[in-house]
Length: 384
Ligand SMILES: [Zn+2]
Ligand SMILES: [Zn+2]
Ligand SMILES: [Zn+2]
Ligand SMILES: [Zn+2]
Image (tube, rainbow, N blue to C red):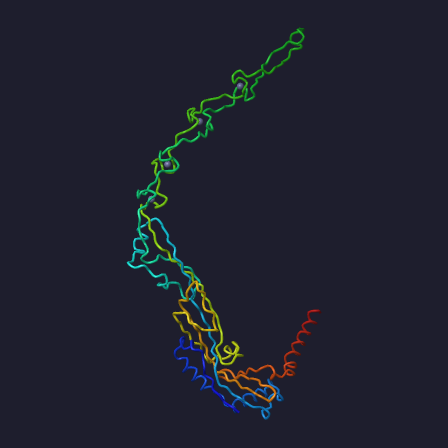
């Protein structure tokens, strides 16, 4: 018979919570279980039917009780990548005159701006990186030669009425566009009795008016026969100049470093315990222990528990949610094999056990059989 208290924990836990050691000590002390108590708790479960009596024969076993703890750790990381790009834009004094002109160049990682643990991208002007320069495209005039009229303010455009031909063609009204006209004749049939055989005959002749073309050409009235029209340039409205496309008329350019920060938060959970069979569900079933939240403004090295963040960025903040529960391991040894039962939580009402202590007959009778029966009933009901 043996009783033991196991209190060791990884170093980094006290970097998260400096009082973790005393917290662990008091939790384990308050909830320590003696060999006698452990026996009693296990016996109650035997009566309750969870274990079978033949497996837990205390008279043939040695007991080893280890009072310890487990901590459920939820880690959130605020991980950011940042890149710097030099950018030049038109200098709008209303927008830029107060941005980026600090005396000292801002360190890329100096500002912490993105919302905690939120996936987001943010851009800002790097402090001290801004400069204003004259616009070379327009020689700081704010205007450049109009590309449409090449600075003339007007240009010739093909006449739309005559399509550039200078003349338009109208349908000949005499022949109605046919180029031929009917020449009507009165004929007198056979030269016999006048009136008796009188008839009308006609023949087609070429239209003299349009010279058989069917249309009449006329000088285009819109362009006076020029075929083109002088138009005031609609891009520069006749001035021959347009707003400079480089400086947008501001005559100066603003150049600065833009910092782009990209936050990809990560989250992972794991359990710290001296026992390796601890399950996360053991924490959920104990409502009396509240979790505690801590924030650390740097990346902690948690050794094997968590992979370090990738090197292309930085962890600017870490959040830790810690939930500590007492756990007692009872090692039972009947000379042939050693097995463990866990007494978990302040309520001591949860007992985890390794499989060899479970009563398979009872599990079969009370779990598997009813399930099969229910399935069978369901099967017949559906068939009907
Ligand atoms: Zn005609
Ligand atoms: Zn015309
Ligand atoms: Zn123009
Ligand atoms: Zn310009």
